Image 1: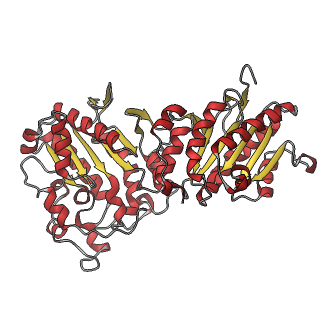
Image 2 (image 1 turned 180 degrees about the vertical axis):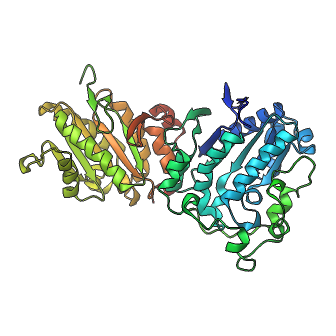
Image 3 (image 1 turned 90 degrees about the horizontal axis):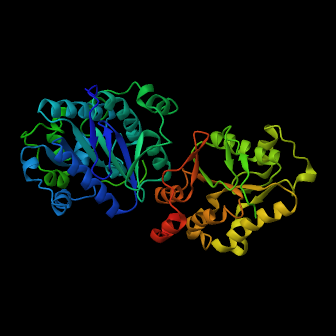
Length: 271
Length: 213
């Protein structure tokens, strides 16, 4: 895990980078974003990695279309489960709540599972606007992002986290900079001067997990009935983390159905 | 018009930088901001530059105290000479309107005047929250910021533009990052990977009315 020192291509830029590179893409131009992300996905598929795309604003079918338009055949990797487009909210907030510890567990499991299935590695990209809907736990997103840096040193999931600068507030955008060691700027991957090590970033934030003792199971904090739970979310309630980044052929429900079923309360555009 | 740009200290680190270095300070911690600004301003006075502070929120006496705490004595006779604190809106928006060209002329002119008056140069810092009040022309702020980079060769006034991340929206901050060649991060002056040359930035820049309140 990670000790192999494998390097990967990113597709949108030349050169090789260590697998497990954790990057943010802070953007305000849709065309530039599509160009970067579709090449990132394509490059993962070409190198036979497992690829997960967590869509929030983009219709899942559109993601497949981007790739088809670039001449990438997605049918085979889709069939064997190597390429999955999932609703971001189902990935980050199964049960309707964002719990960083659980999501980190899903990342680890996703990596192990990909390797177990014979893939050389795994890469993911998420549209982070799911965090703007005020779901419980969303205020812990930056803490999660910081801790991802610890996880990827052992479970080198290569990740591009997408933040639409037109939707997030300035304070969040500044923090996004602090938790990603690398960033994508002008289509290039560059070292991020704002980056802080997770422990350093988290130590000044009293609400974060390192100082919290309430990282209990979801039910203990949010008993059923205290909030609206969609049918889809309830169905997934008892399943393991591994189900969200499932092994090939495990039959996760299609993303479109999941999107229809989710709670859509928008409480504003801040975290 | 200087033939070679002087190397100056900017408070934030021991290194020297060319005068005219255009920096942004995007911050969310008032104490860290104060530390950076105090040393920047005090270094300017010590270097023999004329120093201007354009305040939006901070009391003028408080700014003078920052400098005094760094061991730089500003007696009353210096008040409008070596070091001046001005209201940001008066500086950026005289007549109740922000006009980039006018402000660029004032900024460059301030450098020329400082040098004529015997100062070795000029440095300024502005609290940019004045742009969040809906003053006409505020939407041109980022355009102005981009164009500052065109005058830094000939009228190398050294500016730190302060943006409180808690007040500006993400789209504006991303644009702020695109127009400052250098930035202050963790108390250090670093090259800004987002920086685009003014012409390149202005070609693709589309002002959004919502960006400035």
